[in-house]
Length: 192
Image 1 (cartoon, helix red, strand yellow):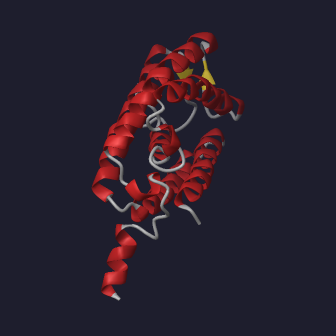
Image 2 (cartoon, helix red, strand yellow):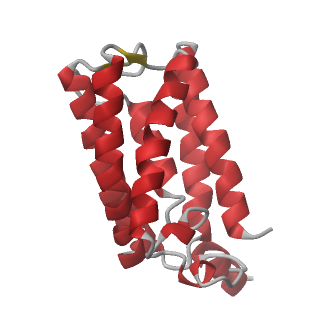
């Protein structure tokens, strides 16, 4: 299976697990699913350090943004708040999951910064609307929150794509070649 397809499918599973578990008052379950998916993602990364660096930087940017939405009172989260005023841990996990798509299933956006901005402006608000419709978040001031999300994602998405290109843990996959495994599987093969 091509890694970008696996990445897309596991992201969708992780997103749903985080949102639905938070909506049903069990956000830890979504967090555990996200950790498993991220573990698999990192096990497959040929350039582990690059991918970790990208994930940490990009997910931090997104988590700060979601914390700002919370601090403004435009968004609230019924479950999973670990530190007052900071985005819940399941939202942070979702940022890591999303950032894990930047070098694989979303890698086609690299170098297409205008398209990345348009995708961010449209996809960002749709994700928050979906989260509200599934009862995982509340848009307390929907108009202000969705405008802020659209504006922020318009700028964040191209920045995240540039950072992912700079710290690409999957360079062969991004060039269209199938990567047979990552550092973990190469290490296991070397031990056998």
